[in-house]
Every structure is written in C-alpha cells, then in structure tokens.
Figure 1 (cartoon, rainbow, N blue to C red):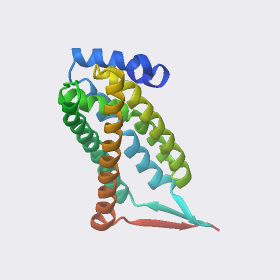
Figure 2 (tube, rainbow, N blue to C red):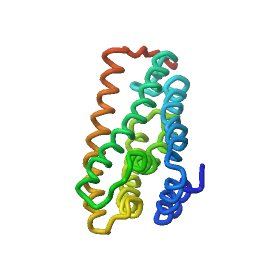
Figure 3 (cartoon, helix red, strand yellow):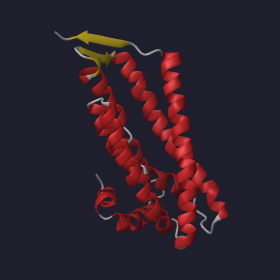
Length: 203
C-alpha cells in the first residue's frame, strides 16, 4: 500500500491533504490505486466460491464452477470500476451547485479513495458467509461514510458548512448508484450467464 492509503486508515484527517497534493502533481495518480485495489474483491470471491464454498444445508457444501466464478469476478471488477467512475461523474456534476470546481479526474480520484474500505473488505470473499459479509460490508460502509464527510471539504477546498452539504448529497447519490449497478450486475449474472453450482455432500 502507498503512504496515502495507509494514512486513510491511520491518520485520515491528514491523508486527504497528501492525496490532494499528489493529485495536483500527477492528475491520474489514482488510477493505479483503483485498478489494483479493485482486484481484491473479485479475486478473493473467485477463490472463496470455487475452493471454499458455502453451506445451505447440513452436510452439503456448494461451490461455483471455475467458469461461473470467473464470470462473476470479471463482472464484479467491471462493476466496481464503472461504479467509481459514475460516482465521480456525479460528484463533478453536483459541484456546480457549490463553490468547488474540480476536474473529472479529481472527482473520480476522490471517489476511488473514499471507497477504499470496500476494497479491503473484499478479503472477506475468501470465506463466503452471509453474516460475515453483512458485518464486514457494514463496517466498510461506516468507514467510507466517515472518509467522505471528513475528506470532501479538504479535498475540494470547500468551507465546512458547504462541504457537509456537498458530502450528504454525494452520499445519497453514491448509495443509489452503487445499489443500481450492483443489482443490475447480479441480475445479469443470474438471468443471462446462468451460474453453475457444484454440490458436495459430506458424510
């Protein structure tokens, strides 16, 4: 992990200043962060669904075939990249209402760093479990919200009151975008690609 990423989890108040400074020097510095860390959820999910599996009934383990798991992983990766880009576009669009005049690159970069907790939470995909997923994703959502509200005023050079209103607007739109894209991905995977399940009985 780069120093700004570590700071997001250890010194978040200072991390955004470093990230903004780095962005001003290298406008697309976020791309490596986004493209590499976004691999964590799909890669872990592929391993978890093909090698570990999950149980729906006592004595039965369900796994995905490698082909189905690969389809799911690729779809998830594309969905993550697309989702971050769309949220960045909405951040840029909503900035017209406020004093900030960020570039599209800055907005996508901010979105990419804000959702970093979800990338790290993707490690939970190694052990597919509904309750583990709810717990980990819930924690990631809380921390991403925290990063959003403390980071947007600093990153966009906004006054605190305007920054809070801007952050609230971004939170609402971001939630809508993520839910819409994820639901669309799941429906496509289930109804068009038709996943193949492998069931193993124990005992």
